[in-house]
View (cartoon, rainbow, N blue to C red):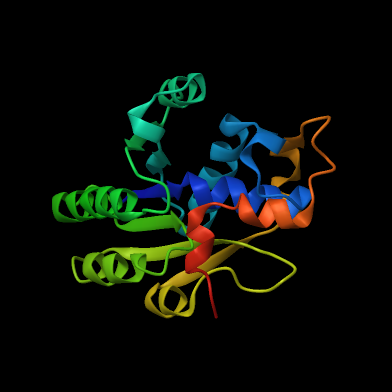
Length: 201
């Protein structure tokens, strides 16, 4: 039986999702309903393919390998596989290599036919091409922004399709934490996830 799966770069999804709804990419400025977000993404994947969702692979970086209470809560969520990557600031190789491992393993085993990836890392385009050669259809989940595309051109050109997620979709799942609303735009930019550095047109 064909199935699909979700692959979420949390740095991208949570930062750009908060930006689309509240105008900030600061992780400590918002509170997410992770279970609600997962349900939304799984619903989008099912609606697009008509297939059941195997699970969601959730990729997070952990400073010096430290596991937080939020990580523990995510790991306990049904249908979610937490992938913690011990990455240095400004380095993305850990998430890329873990994502590649999961996609290639699932493609070779025939566990899924469709992969939905939420990421704006242009280097993932190479991984997309590799697993397409193994028979996967790859859809990119793009969080829409008023400033235009956040998905880099190489990734847009390589994937099979793009599903756009707007702030309207996400509004119910992310709240602004009282007391941090006044963060300036310059500081928001500096605090943006390193994945934003890969974006371009």
